[in-house]
Amino acid sequence: MNTQQLLAEAQALQPTLAELRRTIHRHPETGFDLPVTKALVMEQLTEMGYTPQEMGRCGVVALAGGKKPGRTILLRADMDALPMTEEADVSYCSEIPGKMHGCGHDMHTAMLLGAAKLLKAREDEIAGTVKLEFQPAEEIFQGSPDMIQAGLLENPKVDAAMMLHVTAGMPMPSGMFLVAGGGISSTSCEQYHITVRGKGGHGSTPHESIDPITAAAHMHIALQEINSRELEGNQFGVFTTGRFEAGKASNVIPDTAEMWGTIRTTDPENAVGALIRTRMEQICKGIAAAFRCEAEVTFFDFCPCMMIDGTLAASAMASMRTLFGEAAIDLSVVSGGKAGGGSEDFAFVSHHVPTVSMFLTAGSKQDGYEFGQHHPQVRFDDSVLWRGSAAFVHTAMNWLAENC
Image (cartoon, rainbow, N blue to C red; front, top):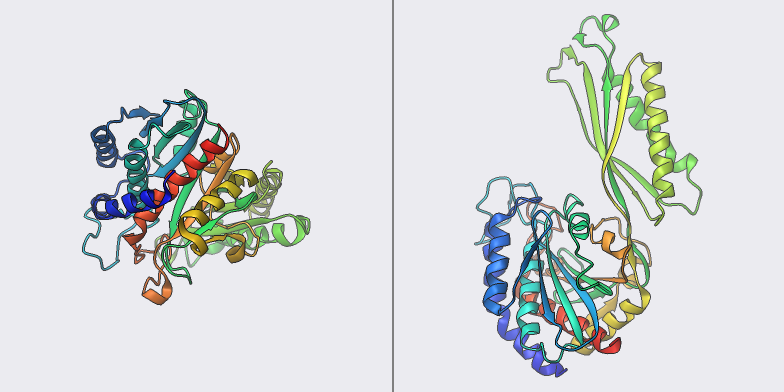
């Protein structure tokens, strides 16, 4: 592969990629409801000469190469936005109330479309097949398992997989690549919902009511003891309540109180998660009974921890060093060797085939990109899009050549 030519062609695509990204940014869509984004992706791929296929509830796949025998590598871009109102001061701000590309998935989609363009021009050189995946519903951890169930990893069978995620608000310049090494790179995540039922009444006569708020407050405090008293010293588990709701008026004891939150672990077998779930139910029901209430605990939207293949990660790092030199660094330099707390539903793929995850810095604090992902004022430096496209292409083609 002519590396300099690849970089030059990728740079030439930058204005097109920026416009694509900003178009997607103006029209954010969430979950599996992505008709505009999906249509744009299908149209772009068709214009490039691909025959894109719909997969699952709202996914898109296309194949590059296949003219030479070899293995298949999967490249993923997620397409969904977040259900939040944008507050960033940009000229291409979201035009959809209550929806925003606050995690950079618009960047990912544009970068993979750029990679598709570059790969199409190199189909005769590809030593195998590159499968392009445009995935919905990453933010709710449902898009990846949906596409896997629909056949993502088959026809042709996928032998390796790669994802690339942009990140803003980092203390390093734009355009840096952080490559995760072998092992667990991000935690699992599971959502929970606790409903505490009591008996409502007037605030002046609490003795005639059964206060669910008091019971729920004791539950919230007691559940923190799972980490400090029930997990072994080498086990990792984080229990977080992010939402607590009860009542509508200051002088009324409500019938119910509710809590929502997440459980995160770094256990591939999820035994730690199973322990936490069991103890949560026991603690909540026990405290509810002590306060004459009833409690119901439900769990949903599970995502496993991300497993990184060391050999594939080394190949990806070699590609990044070839392309961008010292701008490619091991993620452990930043993370201290610890798994990241954020979860990613491409982890489902990592439990089926060797997977690598990379991050591309897209806006530093020193350059005014103060906010990080999932903040209403987050901004991403889309001048790095061409670098992401080149990274996708070189990593895929280099790995296929090494493993043909």
